Length: 323
Image 1 (cartoon, helix red, strand yellow):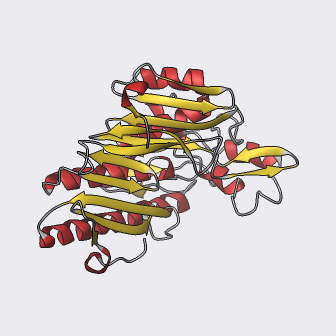
Image 2 (cartoon, helix red, strand yellow):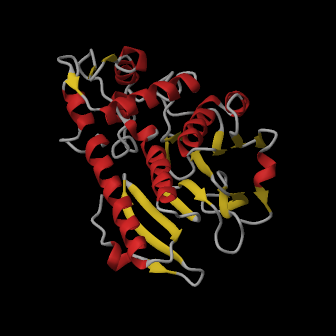
């Protein structure tokens, strides 16, 4: 996480919202919130950044000293002692894996390494490499006991990137509520939690990105006290020998999703749910993804493919005329 001084970077707009922009969890982030007292605002901003820094230090696979990295380094060897926070993350992973019928799987690190975004543009991995990496995945293989976890095979690895930002957004929303903040927009790399309203309306306008026209929105949402997450390959894809490859991998095949989906937007009571179901729906495809999301109360999904846009029955109730 890039070091940020709230006292130097916190800006206030004409509506009284304070804007904090920073880089964390591998992406561009921002928090907009309304809090009149200057000292309280600075304290909240500092505490939010401090929490994110600690979270990243413990759970980022890119930090060699993180707890996740220690678990991965011990794969195929010994048990690793973990604390209650790591237990909680593993429990969340277990729940999301179950609710998405196994689509959200935190053991995909071997596949992510094979599909290294820095190299696959020039040379695709061999099918044998993908099969070997796929054999090292599977959430059911992770061994757990109270206070410890073990990855039984050398080469296995955990990666909480599939739900880490979403979990963090929910935690920051909870922190805001605890500090008496009723209006806030938390945006961690477009994983969004909207509290209250934007000062003009009792809600926030959140654009729905057009998967067929990157950089444009085809509509907007009026969101309050809910989360919005989107999944798509419109921003990160490449063409190799005339074939389009996106960055979202199908855990069932080990290859990038190739079902014609372009974007999925999900509204849910929590960012954790919105992110999990947007990813699952993108991988499963419109029909199965929408059906899966419809089984969870309060979750609404909209899926865009080359053949059009479709969604759950109540998604349209959140739409506004312009984002």
